[in-house]
Image 1 (tube, rainbow, N blue to C red):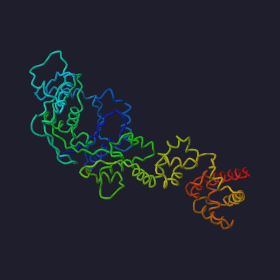
Image 2 (image 1 turned 120 degrees about the vertical axis):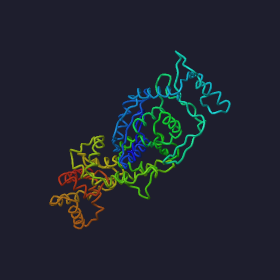
Image 3 (image 1 turned 60 degrees about the vertical axis):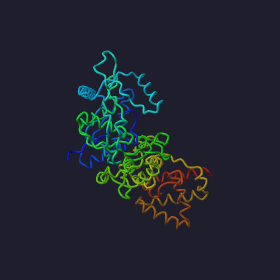
Image 4 (image 1 turned 90 degrees about the vertical axis):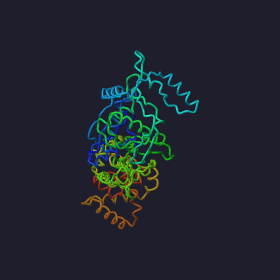
Amino acid sequence: MSEIRLRFAPSPTGYLHVGGARTALFNWLLAKKEHGRFILRIEDTDVARSTQESVDAILEGMRWLGLDWDEGPYYQSERFPIYKESVAKLLAEGKAYRCYCSAEELEKKREEALAEGRKPKYDGTCRKLQGELPGKPYAVRFKSPQEGVTAFDDLIKGTITFNNEELDDLIIQRSDGTPIYNFVVVIDDATMGITTVIRGDDHVNNTPRQIQLYEALGYPVPRFAHVPMILGADKARLSKRHGATSVMAYRDMGFLPEAMVNYLVRLGWSHGDQEIFSMAELVEKFTIEAVGRSAGVFNTDKLLWLNHHYIMNGDPQRLAELLVPFLKERDVDPAKGPSLPAVVKTLQERAKTMLELADGAVFYYRPEVVYDAEATAKFFKPELPSLYQALLAKLEMLADFSHQPIETLFKEFCTEQGIKMGQIGPPVRIALCGGTVSPSIYEVMEVLGKEETRRRIARALEFVKAQG
């Protein structure tokens, strides 16, 4: 069996959409599983809408997801001579013809067909023309078979059949000399040796035309797999009105690439009841035949659940590196304070996103804790200064300032003072963090260290005294 070759071919007219990312992922996984090649091609023939900014955004999204490519990126805009050569070949072999019908004439034909209840397909006016009409602009049309059927076995949807009489003669080159999508995609896939085409099912109706072009040009026809669309909660096609649709927007919202990959692959593909997969497991277990025929519904709550799993079980060092930009957005310099991986370890069990992780880490690095007014009103009692002072004295004597000895110290302190943990724990938490929600105060104190812990409690002591 020959080497399997797959491609992802986005148009650079915007960001990398989650639907496009899933298509890229399916192609990438199958290429890796079958030890084949994954090719990246940029379909930038729409010069008016294609931008370098969009190209950069697509490449950034691919790299963030970890979808490296073996060849490319190739750019259609650099391949026009190849397309023109193929147009000339079809014309010379009588498999295409020049169409001199103007846009106005074509529109009139369309309106007449609709008025008569006919399908508005081209009526073949120029198909039988002999010779050329010098000086008159023309498009080039492919002579589509007018009888029989064009069928293919879709790897996801099964056999799909089209009656050729329903297909009109496709324009393959516009009157300005530029080729159209359905033509250039065939030339590109054929000349790049693509053996399997995995793409969205909005391309199903393009497939019979493309198969006819493969055959007319003498190219082998690849296998096709058309992936169902991704829908919003209202079962409409996923769009901006459902929320973010850009892959990089999810990065900026604090999602991890492994969570996004895991979620996207499960949005249409399954392997038993397993929900969480490493990339290595996906490569091992993925098959295109296991992709469902029904559209997937994007569920942000499920993505959050996966993201929480990967944060909770992530390597603190890696998470710390990813966290730095989010902290800088909050005017926090993680170099000026406790070890960031140590901070992450205290927070990752609860955080669902990197944004939450960043918000939770801020208090560690603020030189002056901002106290929550409601919390201080509830827990800063008149007897607190004496308790703070006694606790400071006890903390001063602690040699091993780590989690377990600190917890033991608090238990002993409560016994000695005849109080419950609820009387000293919240005030200490407020002193250290500013509010009553934080990781374990024993963990917080260990990360802050003895000197910073004592400084914060001493400052809270002065604050309580000043309140009278």
